Image 1 (spheres, helix red, strand yellow):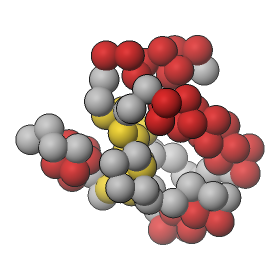
Image 2 (image 1 turned 45 degrees about the vertical axis):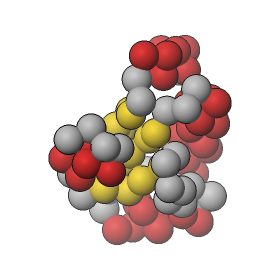
Image 3 (image 1 turned 30 degrees about the vertical axis):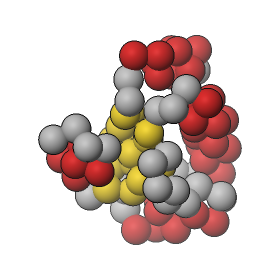
Image 4 (image 1 turned 30 degrees about the horizontal axis):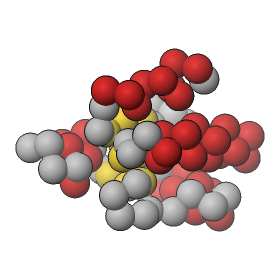
Length: 87
């Protein structure tokens, strides 16, 4: 967790790739919320890529919804870079 909290110091975008994840639970969502809060304080945009529809639904029910300039749900890494203005 410390690495993720410090990762934002030189980055404008951090991508969490869920391509190979088969599921996510409430504990994982809670942990992500804490990390996202820290990254937001550092003005870092976060993108979740490759999430299955049921994972997106669980994340949104857990309070993680898309917020322009802060959090995006993207199909792939290129879409995330594009949304962050890095392409």
